[in-house]
Amino acid sequence: MIYILQNYWRALLYSDGYHMTGIAMTLWLLVVSCAIGFCLALPLAIARNSENPFIWGPVWLYGFIFRGTPLYVQLLLIYTGVYGLHFVHNTPVLAGFFRSAINCTLFSFALNTGAYTTEIFYGAIRDTSHGEVEAGRAFGMSRFTLYRRVIIPSALRRALPMYSNEVILMLHATTLAFTATVPDILKVANDAYTATYAPFDAFGLAALIYLCISFSLILLFRKAERHFLAHLAS
Amino acid sequence: MFNLGGYGPHILAGAATTVELSLLSLAVSFILGLIGASAKLSKNRAARFAATVYTTLIRGVPDLVLMLLIFYSLQIWINDITDWLNSLQNSFDFEFTLDPFTSGVVTLGFIYGAYFTETFRGAFLAVPKGQLEAGRALGMRPSLVFRRILFPQMMRYALPGLGNNWQVILKATALVSIIGLSDVVFAAQQAGEATLNTFFYLCIAGAVYLVLTVISNGVLLLLERKYMIGVRKAVL
Image 1 (spheres, rainbow over the protein chains, first blue to last red):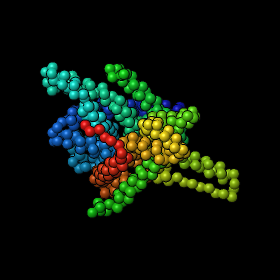
Image 2: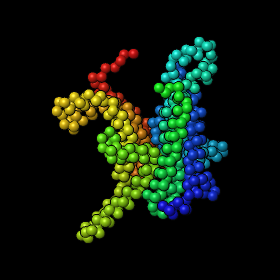
Image 3: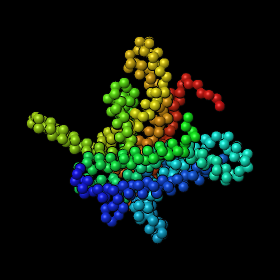
Image 4: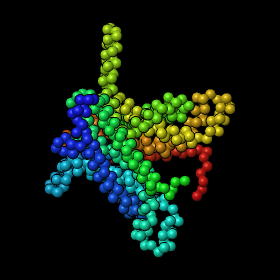
């Protein structure tokens, strides 16, 4: 344990001297994929609530596919599968993008969390109380203003508990990045394991770090809930 | 029909392994969940504490980390135990090698047992206390109260959560290919590497998961209908 800490503390925290690794990498993966997923999910959730089957149909299909298959399969597909396709291989822009492990990882993570987040926001938007919407209409708000001022702020607040769950699950999902050779916490732990053959120490240390990050995220979200959901507290 | 360039049977066998692994892990985590929920709701302080530690630790740590931790450590622990047994009695020669399938079942069951504990805890609490007291008043033993009264009613509340957990387990079995089990993902990867058409075979693997999801949704609907017998639904 001491040996691992002495030799790998820097790699576990932020860098192995050349690249960003460890906790910094894990958090970077988490923040970027959740940010892209969020931006993707908001318009898709609104589209999912549309009455036109040609609009909600594709969004439903996207959710069905990405929530029905394991993230590991999606990551493999994007990391090893897409690059093998001829047209990707022969288009310099695409080839450059899909050759990088971190790009592929972020891409698949963002698509995956986007699908789950869409479903969460979809439910929250659908459950907006009709009184709020009618009040907005009575004020003469246009559809855009109605969404911007009434529906989305209210829906995002109510979605916060579910969304915090999704972010924690995403933190756990970032461990898959190590299978694509991205140097996150688990990759460093795995390197420590192959160097020392002490699996309990190496992976136990990683587990502890993940536990700490999970708890910090839970605390952060609890604070946010207390702030944003204050009007709903009984 | 399922030839797929000669790799159809291989992938089908992988899919069978995936289903087998998920069902066995479901059984293990179901039982662990029942035990954990009973411990969480028991009057015994030590049991409550142990169950709380179990659920918080397991749910705070990524499943892949736990899987690697348990998979690699379990064999070492087993070796230590067998070494110790052998040193005790020289005439014996114990040896036990953990295959990826067993350790997959054990680890997945252990991890998702924590999630089932939370599901069952909520469901146990949702059953009205009077029902249990009525059972006791009729002279039923606790085990009979559990079997005839608590379990059937609790399942109704637990089913949506159970369905979710099942889908998560099904998808988590894909991780077991990382520790070397030849499940459907592993088979698809092998086929892809051999034919240089990884994209196609991984899509097939994804399709297998989609089919399994659809089937389990159907089964869940049937189960829900079974456990909803005798419950009046409000007409909206």
